[in-house]
Amino acid sequence: MEIIDVTTFALFAMTAGLLIGCVGIGGVILVPLLAYAGGVPIHTAIAAAMFSYLVSGAIGTFVFARNKSIRWDLTAWMWAGAMPAAFLGAVTASVTSGWFLELCIGLLTGASGLNTLLAKSNKDGEEASQLGKPALAGIGAFTGFASSLTGTGGPLVLVPILMWLQIPVLTAIGLSQAIQLPIAVLAAAGNIYAGTLDIVLGCVLAAGISLGTWGGAKLAHVLPKATLRLIVSVLMVIIGGLILVKIAYGALAG
Image (cartoon, rainbow, N blue to C red):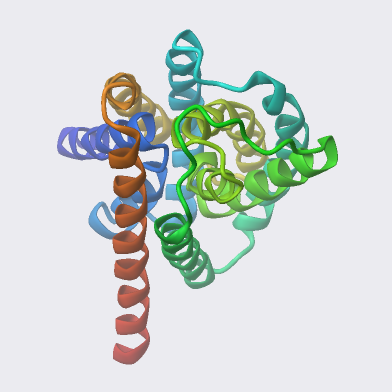
């Protein structure tokens, strides 16, 4: 890997990490940046991105936990569902066509953004709806599978679900940080098993994402919650739309 590539990929990861730490969804831009701007094969990009979320998950969880922004009573059962599903999602991604993976990423991103943009905002400090253990495990399982299948990390999937359930935005982002780590561990194991993980690329991304996530998590506790929600929504809609436009253009050109 050339020095220019290392620098470019590290900057991609730093940008994604900043958004992950701040609004919880930065992982969605990492795979498209690697695949479209960096020329990395999409299966390799997904595997390396999931590996880098080991770092962003650890850092984000630490910062949000220190600020008491993680609902640990909701976390354990989500982890229980997410971990086996993440391994299955990683193995599934390795045998799925690149075109279909791109389509999944685009649809998931755009739909999540629209859902978050249109959903009613919960009032600051309002208690979240009480969810049963099976529901929490089911949410975790869906998050784990979809995240490792598309290489977007847990937050992109989990944040819109939790906001739809009327969980305050900062709490939703905190939970999305906590779920990254177990998903990344099992997804990395699945990608190693499938032979799609480029460990050097993964380490470069991890270095960049660590710096971005730390700064973003600090910023999340300074910005108004309404601003965080708006950033989350608009960013996902724009990125999802661009991915779908790219796929449509490729289909027409082909």
